[in-house]
Image (cartoon, rainbow, N blue to C red; front, side, top):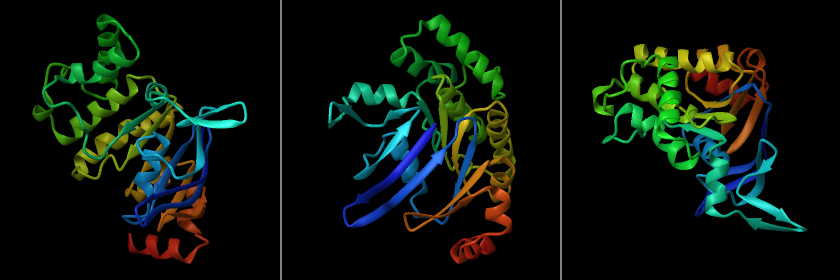
Amino acid sequence: MIEAVGVRKSFGALTVLDDVSLSVAESTVTCVIGPSGSGKSTLLRCVNRLERIDAGRIVVDGELVGHEWRGDRLYERSRRDVARQRTRTGMVFQNFRLFPHMTVLDNVTEAPRALLGLKRAAAEERARDLLARVGLAGKETSRPHQLSGGEQQRAAIARALAMEPRAMLFDEPTSALDPELTRDVLTVIRELADGGMTMIVVTHEMRFAREIADQVVFMDNGRIVETGPPQEVFDAPRNDRTVRFLTSN
């Protein structure tokens, strides 16, 4: 479903992604762990074309992200085409990013109406179903400031799912939440995994990663240091850097 090959990304003199290659099979969950500044979030942003890569390629659902071949030449896709591609990968950020002036229902219906052309009634029906799915039935007319942090994050998940993406990207979705609210959000993500959603989850929740992941990726200094099933990475890591990181967490 998602493949990155030889991806490089720099910000000025700082190399953030250094020859990163990763494959994520359909209906599997990949958890990306590692210290702050290791490139985890940047990798997600590149998959969703929120950042342009400097080298390599990323393919989502069989389609090259950000570029297209015309004959034997590679061309950059139009902004409209990139926006279309982006609808295939729902993105959930650390800080929710809900529109503060909109109700919860409007937050969830805005993108499907604007980008998918859904009529209001159809978009609202889909939104109400998704809000019920994430435990927010009855909160449709609330505004973000009236919700707890966990509720806001669950609304953000519903908003991403409203686009019917082929895959979901989670960028440390519980980092701003206290333990009780973290549990509620992780429950929603676990239910998505049980339903077969393809996901990449950047997380600092090691127990959660062990439970939910089909593969765990450990990153450090912009490189993938180790990857494998959770029982291998957590219980029998091969790389000394992985051992040091897990010992400190």
